[in-house]
Length: 118
Image 1: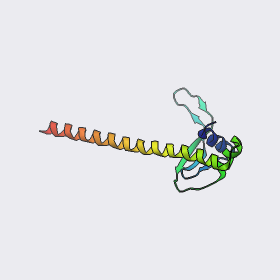
Image 2: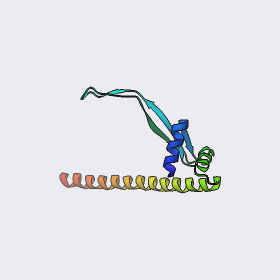
Image 3: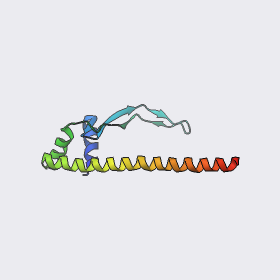
Image 4: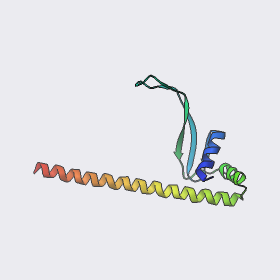
C-alpha cells in the first residue's frame, strides 16, 4: 500500500487523520441529494475535507503505518516525510503555475484592450 492508502484507511477507521507537518484530513457527512434532471436520489455520503497546517504534529499516523507495514517507527516517519515533501513541492509548483498563467492572461488582455482602444 502507498501512503495515500494508509491515510484513507486511517481516515475510514477514525474519521480524522493528522499528517505531521502537512495537515489534517477529516470525513464530513453530506446529505442525500435529489437529482432534478431525472428525479433520482443520491444517498447520504462522506467527503474528505483537508486543512493545511505545516506545523501540526502527531505520532498517530506514523504508529499506524509502522504497525500495518511491520516496519520501524523511524522508517514509517521517513516514508511519510518523503510523501508529504512531494505533495508540498507539487502544491507550490501548482500555485506558481496558476499565478504565471494569470499574469500571462492579464498581460495578453491588457495588450488586447490597449490595441483595441488605439
